[in-house]
Image (cartoon, rainbow, N blue to C red; front, top):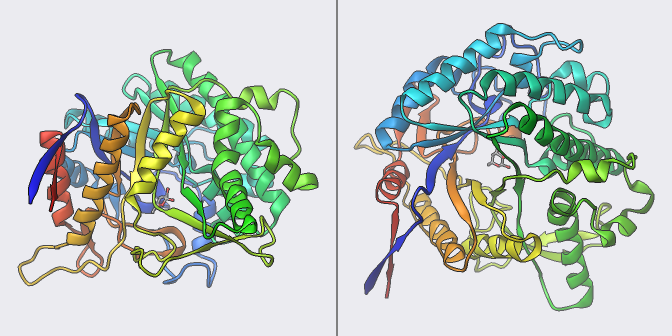
Length: 454
Ligand code: FCB
């Protein structure tokens, strides 16, 4: 047995990530208006355990305690999102000062604790009043987003330097409008593509707005990229994998970096293509300072004549371990491959791992602790994969584990635990750092990962 120490670059940002609807609760407080997730989670049969984010993990009230925890663990970087429906409360663009004040308190408390905030503008909680006029299908929502972003950036950019425009536009557009698993729950290919187009357009336009307001700001977008491989070497499976990569990866990265949709997919989608204006492509490709990569899985893809979207399906190998979230393989090598392929395709863009983590059936042990050795191993192996990408010249700036806390996992409600801090849903939402929290704390403190091999 030998051990090796992997040293990460100086100033590497170690931290955790969360999203407003998943942790805040307080949905009727501080003048917040409903979002599409309030509507969706209150609709019967949409959420696995029937629960809503009304209280979530009550971060709205307990943020001082959560920040103290981060401080105690020595985690000096934190990715959070702003809830648009707390800040702009109607279609006319009325600003809610109590919403701004809530985030003032939160951001000031982070800074006071020595924690750098990375703020995502859109992590899926679209105000319901906009969904009532068609949501992201309607180009007016792009303008409403720009107005909200302008207000937020003007207000917070004296304290926030790092901005992330959208979180995972593919999940927001396709899970929300193609398979109906997320809000607003539609199932329509052209609608999903139109929604995606408006999000990418809003992203590009907002980059320019942020730069105008705060020239020193660093602005990026968060994409969830999977490593895609064909299930077999049969032509039909190889082509299905190319389509999968085209629809879920390249569809969202090509416009941002190249100012165009991938041609193979444009001809595949044919008359499902979104309505767009000539200037949109240029707008979508506004130069960004970094890319946020959310990585959870490899996708092993086979041809599927029954699939109405891209005639492709995900398959699995019995010997590859899967997360409790069954569609996710535990495949750290895919993270390395995603990172090196971004560099190959789009050049030397700085990258943050903006999310990575896993879900387990965590329990509080008799000793009062939460032991999650599989999550520790998962993180260890993914950190090592990132180190390998860095060693090969990728410019990786930081790593945000998903998530700080167990929280409301969208369509799964509270049935999935992704946190490095356990939340006791039976006991007043008590927080208990899991072993993985202490593991991350050690990695952050030393800026190294220890690898052992036989
Ligand atoms: C990502 C989301 C995040 C969380 C994780 C598990 O797709 O961005 O909010 O739900 O998955």
